Length: 282
Ligand code: SF4
Image (cartoon, rainbow, N blue to C red; front, side, top):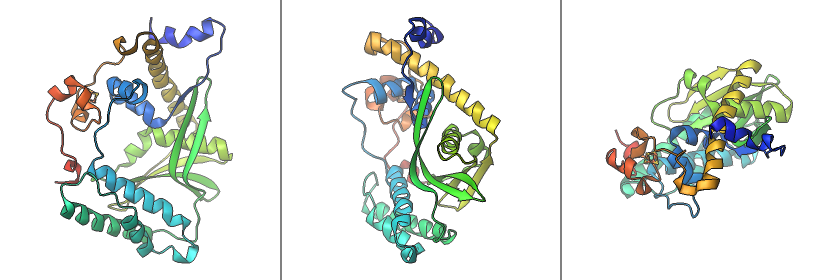
């Protein structure tokens, strides 16, 4: 059975299929590696995931601090308060040792202070970690936006980045999650939302792109295409379980970081695993 045929089976039976419910990250997981997708979303009991890596701990602490900062009363929204929030939300997991954790905590605090210096604490965003959703004929996409700004009568999607290298405008342009968030926000709030931004907290760089209604429609079509393949594979899995051949391994550089490589001989054979703190060095 082809992917297309599997997708249409319910329609041929005259039974409208329920919408396929996905998040943008789930769609990207399918593109990255179908085997990992299966282990992450379908296999039950779910294969054990490795412990959290250091850069994930840093990213979570920064995201949480930038979220909670907006809950402070207006007068207490100072850059220094952001540094304190990094301290209180610090997750001491995945670092080489206490010294590395402490060094990164100090760096993250300074990065947040510098980033918050560029914000006006009196201008409350339209949403913080706002869940948005949008439906198409076959798909229900739901995700969470780090920050939704309102500027000059339009909505702007803001996504925080804490990676080592700064994102580019091209990454903002091609990002499927950002486009889906924009389309969903536009639909939910009935307000134009075409601008998407990646805010790189370590450097203060803002990578951006301004979509059009047409480019957002193209991204929705792209999401539907990915979902069509994933859903056909899930249908096969419902019949065959782990004997389904629709979840091949996708061996590559990501295997060194994969949370499920302990359950994947092909990924292990591809090379050594990166240490928990590898992304914090260099
Ligand atoms: S180790 Fe590599 S091939 Fe295996 S599941 Fe992870 S990403 Fe896929």
